[in-house]
Length: 238
Image (cartoon, rainbow, N blue to C red; front, side):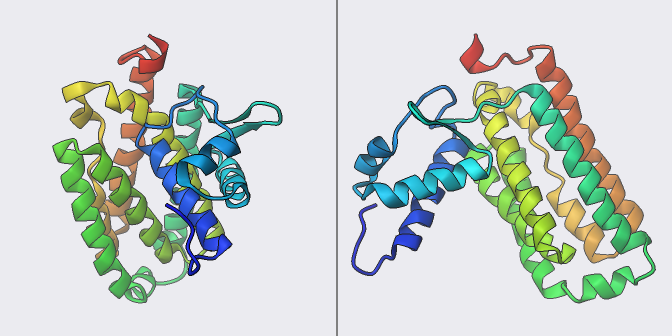
């Protein structure tokens, strides 16, 4: 990905950050493997400045750790970290949807204002569900992140949406090494309730929304319990 005259430094910085994020979420850039700005700049054929900025952006998102003398490495999350991510998502999302469906405002009015956007969210959800049922991890991660990001438009609070998106990227960074090493069992641990969630939201059915979300959180916590018992073991720790 070389720089051209039509590419600004800001755009190049984002392109490099996106490419490295994809490497992390695909499991190709692994924890404990250290790399420097110079190595990444040479890999992409660009100058050091946009690479350094991109790496600091990913560090701010919690995906990388930096060492002043040794460079950067992918942050390694523990099972306890993952459990805390699931619990944090549950608390925040529960509060958001409780405000929408249990508050004084009309849920139908809130959903109606985003009905066009929900059509796109539904498509993302269908693709994510299909990929999860088929065990296609690479496709699932992309559609899952886009699904939740677009669904965040219903929330109407950019700060909450950004916070939740950071948690989901960190959760995927944690989960990918386990899922890659689980062989045929990966299908059992990929949540696929995206379509049911967007249908419940579109119908402004509060109890149905909460039921799907409860399943979502229970699914994550059950998987954390399994991992805490070493089933499967982390591929990098065997």
